[in-house]
Image 1 (cartoon, one colour):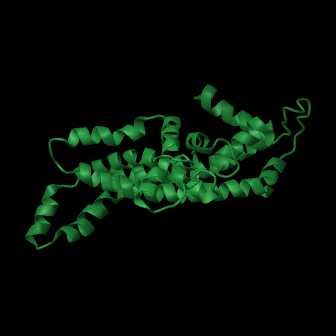
Image 2 (tube, rainbow, N blue to C red; image 1 turned 90 degrees about the vertical axis):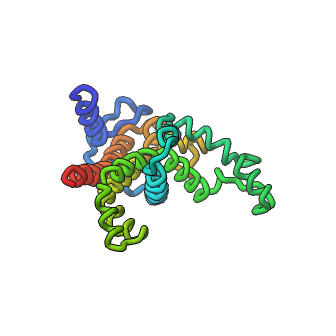
Image 3 (cartoon, rainbow, N blue to C red; image 1 turned 135 degrees about the vertical axis):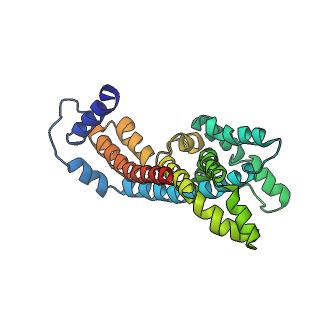
Length: 271
């Protein structure tokens, strides 16, 4: 941990306080928090942050809804339950870059699967360029990421559903409660801590999206998030000072979500 985590964190912080450009390797003057100020004043940073916040909201909503829906289906007892569970886990088990490449064929700007389907149904007259428009591209990235992160949310929610005593539903049925009332007053409140775990995990995944964006659109400016901006600043423009400062800003955003994740775990344990 010291060699692979704490030492790199300390070195990165020291870089963020210095002028560290590989184009000028001998110029490593101490500049304090000037790199942080420069990053926060950059239009590129705010553009990428807007994209990141959009992806965060879209991925969390899609992952939570789809994950809980899949969990409700998997909670039904039947002979194919094990097979359905294995199929549901597949997107989560695949590498993110592979997921991105698969979905790139689906949303290919020319005659990908989605365009062919929409043309066949008569919903569009010409193919839609999904990967060139900013908001269309971000929507596609959100769908791809949610497809990858929803299985984990489904598994967590499934564990919550399985932990609810059946006696509660039987008692509610005796008292005249219908399916909707049982879902509203029993299922949803008791599984809510588990939904919180899945949602927080999805939010951390959304902030750290990288492979899917690269697979779908490369390193273009259209759909870049803060992680892509960090990569370009550090390894394309060779500015390790600003790149390190941006790394710490991203780490701060992720740390806030990590706190909520740990609190969700604690609430689930107390329950």
